[in-house]
Length: 446
Image (tube, rainbow, N blue to C red):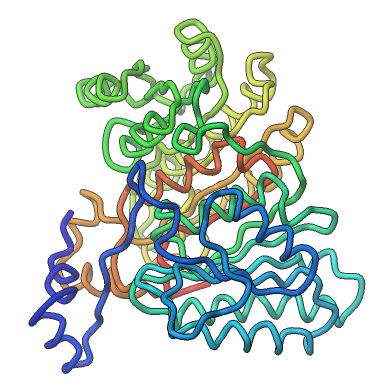
C-alpha cells in the first residue's frame, strides 16, 4: 500500500510546506536491493579497547571505508560505538560524547550501532549500571535521529567476542537496508556459534524452508525473500487459499502444501512433505495467524479459542514434532511471527495479544531445547505494517498509526521478511530466544 503523504513531503514544495507547518517529515527508507552497497558512506568505529580494534579490522575485510577517528564535516554512513569494556557509568561519557560530535555528519538513512555487553552477566552493581545504561542511551538516541537514520544495539554475553560470527552477522544486518524498519532495538548474541555465509547475497543457499500462512501478505513476502536468499521454499496455507498459494509457490519455484495448521498431525505432515519433496528440512517460519477482535467484555469462546488455536497452540504442536524428528537436526532454525500487541497490548485484542505474548514465551523456553543440535529459535514482532488488513483501517486512524514511531511511517511486509531471513541464516546461529521488533521504534507502549 502506498503512503502518499511520505511521497508528498519527501521532496520539493511538499517538504517545504511540511517543515513550515511543523508536520511529520518521514524520509523514504533505504531498503535492500541485491548488489547494493552494504552502507552508504564511510563507517566510523569508536572505541579504544581490543574489541573495537578487532571489529574495525573485520569491517575492513568487508571492503568498507572504515574510520577510527572522525573527519570534520565528512558525511558518514554509520557510527559504531564499541562499549564492551565498561566498568562503571563514568566510562560512558568519553566514548559517547566523542561519538556525539559526529551525529550531525550522518548521511540520510545512516546507521548508529552500539556493541556492548549484557547487564545480566555483570559482576557488580557498577558494571550492571553501565551496561544497562547503554539500553536507555541507545533507545533515546534512536528517537533523536532524522532522515531515515536508525539506531540499534548488539549485546554480547560474557565470553562472546566482538568478532564472533553472529556478532558480525547482526552488525551486517543492522548496517544494511535489510533493517530499514528496525529501530531502537537490541539483539543479544549468546555464543560464538554461527557461521558467516560464503555468498552474502545467498546466505540460505542449500536450505529448505517452510513458511506457514504464505498465500498472501507478509507470508508471501517471507517466501519471496527466503527464495531470493537461496532457499528452497515450501509454502503452507489453508485449502481455501489454494489458488493463491499455488501462485506463490510457482513464483518462488517451490512447492505448496494445503494444510490447516491447527490439525493434530500438522507437524508431521510438514516434515513429510519437505523431506519427500526436497530431501531435508532446515527452517520453519511460523507466520500463520488470525485476528478475531472484540472488547473482552464482549468476547465469546469461539473468538477466543480460534485465535489461541491458530496463533500459538498450533505452533507448540508443530514444534514438538520438529524437536522429535530426526530430519530436523542439522543446525535447525525456527522463526515465529509475534506482534507488538503481545508486548504493549492493543485495545480489543486481548485474545490476539495473549496469543502473541505466548509466542514470545514459547520462543524463550524452546531455545535451550534446540541448542543441543546447534539450532536456534527467535521471534519477530511487527508493528504497523502496510498490508491489506491495515488498508481497511479508517483513514484518520491509519494516518496516526503510521506516524507513531521514530521513522514516522509504516513498515512494509518485506521489512518483516528481511528480519526473518536474517534470523533463519547461519549468520544468526549464536542468537536464540530473542524477540526482534520490526516497528520503527513505535512510541506507544512498552
